Length: 343
Image (cartoon, rainbow, N blue to C red; front, top):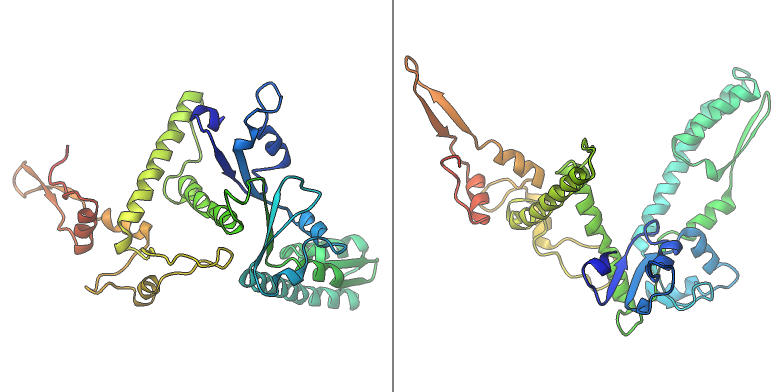
């Protein structure tokens, strides 16, 4: 395991709902022979509850009540279902509004698609329970809103009604998420737990870069284990290099060079005024355009070396294209000169 391989005396693993499950939590504190590790308390974790568990905390005057968030957006609670663990409940009003708007739009779009189908059945142009069911299934599955509708079909009729109670129950969870951890409060307070969990976005970003955006880890065409491991290692090293380049070339891209420190860990991250000025102005004070990281790489790729042959001779001369100001600045930022010769 990671803790044994690197000799970690203390570790807190952070993972999403699918990564740190109850089975993996149990395995984290077990030795190879299945017994409890004597140092199990030194290894903590942070993860989030799934929606059914959150609903249970809300039901029957449970510990998670909406009144907790009248004047704050996070609250620490406990539950006998999670002995020895801290539960940090958070409510993001921006996320709640976004999910409510999305649900309303998807339900409205589904209703719009259902209208002509209902008219066809009512006019008798579509009959037969099987045929009606096929067409209704296509419509209901279009926006994945089937769970919010009750569909009644006969050979000549089609009735579709909203499950308003279920819609309201789902809406009650909008913007809520609950984190669970055994790490004591004197080591990580509630705000630190939320910050650690939200920092998973950086791991997700790096995995995205490795898998698709920049490095194309997959598909892997190797068959031997050592070659697969070597391939993944090279991609990991390339990801580390990319991370440094993104930071170093931030003045040339739309990257926020100095993101403001969030005063509230639950609130959405905000861009600095300088980053907003980049996005709105699109050009730096010298008139050079800002680019995305990928667009910057494509621009650097235009700095080429060509073998030029003069007419009437067999001699060739290597000529470098004239660097643009952006290309010059990119090399200056990484502390390297534009190579004049190949090595």
